[in-house]
Image (tube, rainbow, N blue to C red; front, side, top):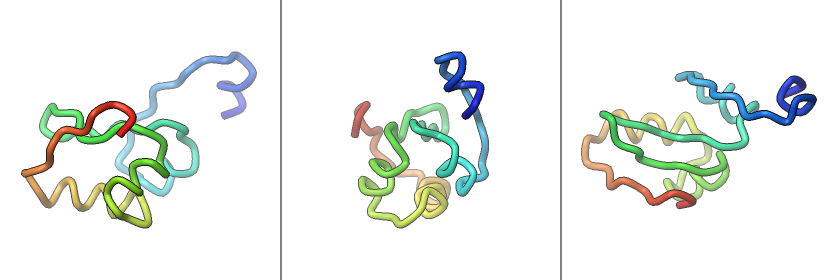
Length: 74
């Protein structure tokens, strides 16, 4: 976050560690089987999936193969 702020740049960060993603990322993209499933702030995504954490969203995505691709900005 410090480097991002100092240099005013975006940083691409990939991880399956959802608590870490919630803490450090301002924008999140969920991609499943090559399809964009969700895009937005952690709060927007949790709201769209009616979940209390990105971990719950992640579990819903990997357990189901029948998700409709969400439009950017949810």
